[in-house]
Image (cartoon, rainbow, N blue to C red; front, side):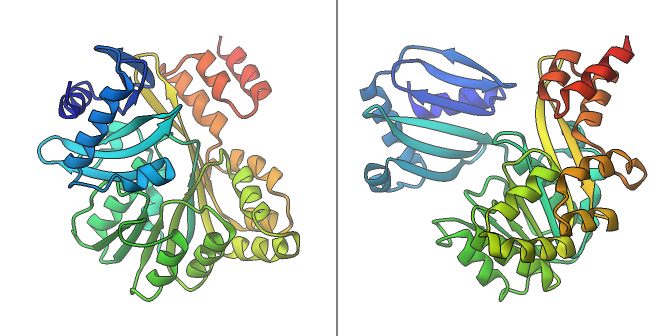
Length: 354
């Protein structure tokens, strides 16, 4: 079997990921479930597949993988799809985890991204954070948001990604897309450079450390719109995570800055639906004066109450979002309970539905 066959098979089956690990057949992740197909692959087979993949990706140099044991990159096959690759060493042999990325930008309605999330495309300054576990669809939501800005506003959008997944064409806006390791050495370096590149909007793939967070907050303070991601679930844990990445003597300062620049936090999870697909659930927090005070006063744990009571401002908690999916017949009560933040609250509400 050739790597091209495996990639074509994945696209034909609408797989989100391909897992190629020694000792088992090629595996495809489809709607969150892993399906194995074909013959068991031995280390020698995988070595050949890796070499073939690197040739397909523009004759990429294998030395980085040999030296560090990991290599991340993306490439495209015309007429088929884009692919994001993580090549790795495991138990002495090679392995591949490949994300399948469509050439077409995602359709936000087909994906179930609601209006209160898309409304952030109208923001012009400050910071908006998209959070959730790895594989929860943050990159896809961001691509929809960038596309909405690109179609409606005359702006310069700079994206800094690791690696680039969705390609944006220039529409009303100009979109500059930079990739880590290919175009720049780090998020921090690219972010500092971006401030000299006349941006209106900066999309930062991930805020990984205190230096990057500090630079992102500064960019938001100077009148730009900064959009970024974190692997947290929920607005309150997102604020705590940012503050905790700084030494104690700097924490009050970052709270004060965040209280000024933060405009919203969107958290998302992908939930197994009753029809066998995956459906997104969103928590949406719009920062109002009450929330700014809670951030400043180190009372992030009280945010959930404000979000729950602010539906008129387009806010919704994760648990309210899950409950709506149960009420509309999209997901099971068990799935809602499993993914809930406050299981006691969820159990009571689910009990009241019967």
